[in-house]
Amino acid sequence: MPSNDTLRAMHRQMVRIRLFEETIQQSYFEGKLPAFDIAAGPVPGEMHLAAGQEPVAAGVCAHLRPSDTVTATHRPHHVALAHGMDMRRMAAEIFGKDTGLGHGKGGHMHLFDPATNFGCSGIIAEGMPGAVGAALAARKQGRDDIAVSFFGEGAANQGAFHESLNLAAVWKLGVVFVCEDNDWAISVPKAKSTAIASNADRAAAYGMPGVLIPDNDPVAVYEAAGEAVARARRGGGPSLIEVKTQRLLGHFEGDPQLYRTAEEMERLKATDALHIFERRLVDTGVLSEADAAEAWAAARAEVDDAIGFARTSPYPQPSDALLHVFA
Ligand SMILES: Cc1ncc(C[n+]2csc(CCOP(=O)(O)OP(=O)(O)O)c2C)c(N)n1
Image: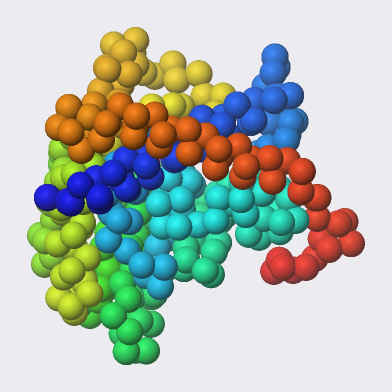
């Protein structure tokens, strides 16, 4: 069981992620409507938000240090924030500004941060081999840093998933594979793409522990991740954790979600893990109502500051178009 301090820190983390995602959503739609124009407004391009998936990021990253490598997906904001990415430079990257982590040339799906060893990609499952490589590098350099690869259940049918799990297990590398099963790969439900109910069962095929967290509970994620991270750090090899999490929003912003039923949307609202967790902490005396309100106010101020920084930062100069890119 996490300490009360850890529970409060996880709650704060989840709150700042939720407010960041909601604020990006508002900024994203500026200028894009009524006819959806993906290039218009202050945040051009596609946008995949992770509201609802906070428990996975908060529960796993609570065990990590900045020198651990983390790879994530096209839906990366929650993991990036939980692993300690600077919110200002992250927001600036999303707004395409020169002060962003990649000078505004990567955008929201390509957040790279040497300070926290974080990378992500719009290519499904691409972070998995990278995490295996990072764990191999750590071993060769004699460090006990580990690598954590976050990926969606849609990625678990890619060859890179199987190759990465196999190689990490054969070489007993310090990798934790974290499957964020939100049940949807764009509009395809898991049952239509995957023959078994839980990817955690696939761990057995590669001789590593597989754990299923069935209910998007941050405490259960924290406990499973604690074991997997400790095992990876002491040289015990890789693990796979699958969390049944929730994608509260569309696959991308602007997705009409016609493939989801009204009942499912209602159920999502009623089982929002952040609100359930907050209520549980208040009911058990870990958090007072005032503490909870303060966490939201502090996150509001932090997010407003970061978005303000992004909005007022300059765009990269046209003359720098070929700088910081492979050309
Ligand atoms: C290799 C590859 N194939 C297809 C796509 C198109 N694509 C983008 S997101 C996505 C679904 C991903 O689903 P999942 O891995 O479950 O992640 P989620 O979107 O649910 O977070 C697909 C197929 C892609 N980006 N890369």
